[in-house]
Image 1 (cartoon, rainbow, N blue to C red):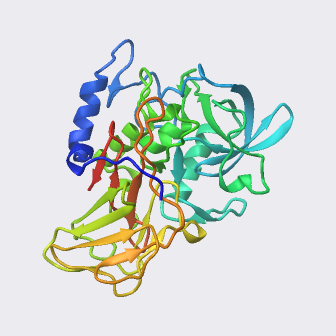
Image 2: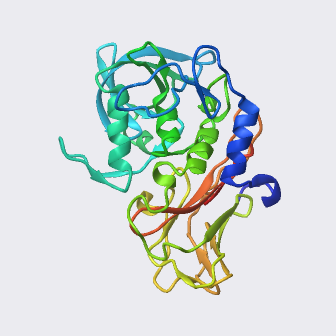
Length: 346
């Protein structure tokens, strides 16, 4: 396994409320003609879609791709089809990962909790609209589709609303809690704050602090052990995820899942805990991404490659997170270990 940098828990983790305060302190309130929400300038409202701050699109100053196209289809909450110079291209939007759809039928969508909501919001933002399409590298493509489907481009999008304000659709989905921040080492511009545009990791931290979307632990309905107090902690160097039960009753994790932002694992479903998995009151179990046999509170993902991204400094600002979902799709605990915007949820 390659050497990996990681942060000590004391340095990497603050509460959602602390992170929110930090964002507001660092960003400040820019009040030059618009109101401010969480440090982001608001210049107008996109009817039916935006409920808070409008977000500036990623800068294209360092982009080798900077073109225009029209979105003709929205596949899900992070993928669109755009017509560029008369040709259709499938675009995997940079910097986010929405929940997965399972039924893509015309006029009828089904999927994981929040998947349909994310898709509908993206449709409101970009469908049948002309968008700006940018990337640092023309060769950037989504990893899965590189195998035999080279036309799935990894790109950032920007669109103007009815007031002429530029909107970053990916940022808005993350801000509303309908997608996870998924950093990319090559297309890294959304990983850092640029002017009035918060980094995607900071937007995720704000969504977690406000319990928006998937950061609401019972938004998909009351789940098993709903009142349990669980804490997730990632050690990216050791490639482990620790789950601690801070309550007074044991919690069964049978059929619960752990995933990273990129959704590694068999059939892209993360790791599912087997029957009989229990976190005792006041106890901890540990998930290892490598190979081994489950025993003594240690569980093994049995993957051949590391899951959790290294923490890096400027300009890439890479990191990742671990997310614990119950069987019905509610996010019950998470640890995003981005130094600039850590999340310890809930």
